[in-house]
Image (cartoon, rainbow, N blue to C red; front, side, top):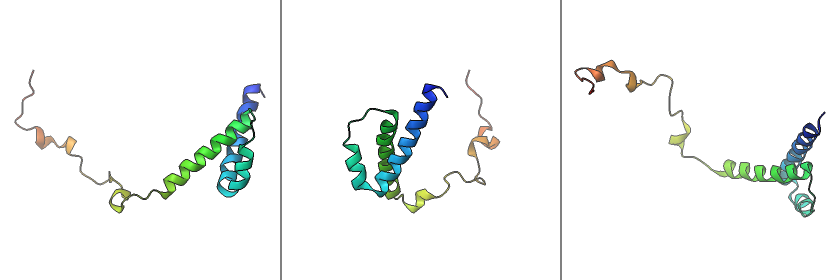
Length: 93
């Protein structure tokens, strides 16, 4: 493995660990977060927490029911392809 691949793997492992620990062990995460470490793993760890917070916010957001449905149903009529709309209209040149 190249050094870049190793760093990416460490970052991914830290990201996953940070995501899970920040969700389930918040006190442990707060203690670990105080460490001043610069490494791909720890950078991923912090980014995992950020993603976890964003996901929690999204899961708490409730859309109105009328927005939950399919806004473009498959069987809807496409008015842009209606040939009767162009009858009697000459394009300007």
